[in-house]
Image 1: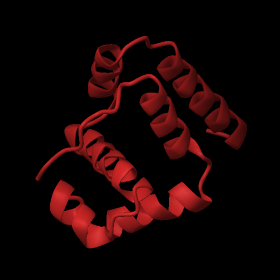
Image 2: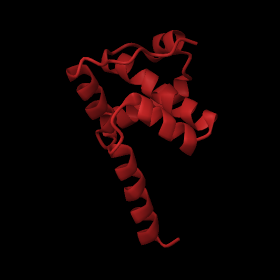
Image 3: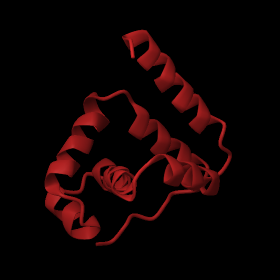
Length: 105
C-alpha cells in the first residue's frame, strides 16, 4: 500500500467508527475488527484516563485498575502531548453523563 492508500484506509476506518450510534454497536464492530488482546490493550489505556485526569499517582492507578505502570505512563504522555483524543472523549462522556466505570483487576 502506498502512504496515500494507507491514509485513505485509515480515514475510512475512522469514518466507519464515527457512524456507529451506541456503545453496543461499537462493541460489535470492534469485536469483529480486533482480537480480544487488542481490545483489552485499548480498554487498559482508557481505564487509566479518568484517574490520570484526577491526578492520581501511577502506582495507585495500577493498584485500582491492574493496568501496567508503563501503559499508564504512555497514556499520561498522550494526555498532555498527544492529539487531544483522550481528553475530548472523556469530556464528552462526562458532559453526556455517561462516564464508564474502570476495570478492576
